[in-house]
Image 1 (tube, one colour):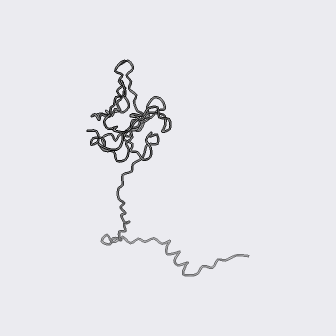
Image 2: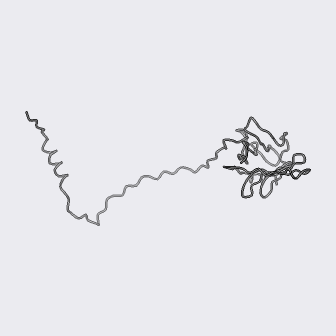
Image 3: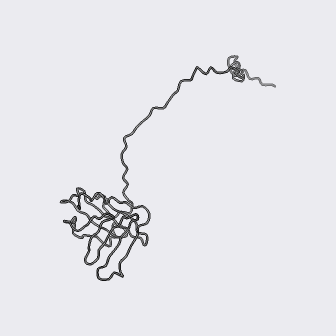
Length: 174
């Protein structure tokens, strides 16, 4: 038994007309309408990412942060909110993570602005007879200068991404 498929005549004509070629040349003076997608603009908001390894607390501003090239240590310079030349606090921190800080300077954050010096290529402070400098002169890291034994001076460079916002201290420390 043979099966037949019945196709309505209108569909058959439509299918056959699609198979024929159109040999007419398009009229160059007639153009198709141009459809463009609407341009959507969003306000540009700077994205500030907090370094994952920062030693600063969530309510502090990270002014400097980097992972040291040797060892598993981080250095951060943290500013309290509302830091100015007469209020707020600034602190240098060095350690493995926020709960394992080996050094905080100054320990007492009152009048911390008076213990830091902003220089052209970094931030420095004296802790006893040792001068520390967070340097940012093309590269970044920490330098220590021992007044009593210069053989102990060190340069500890940063590795990877460096956060450097020390210029924000211009109006605070100068």
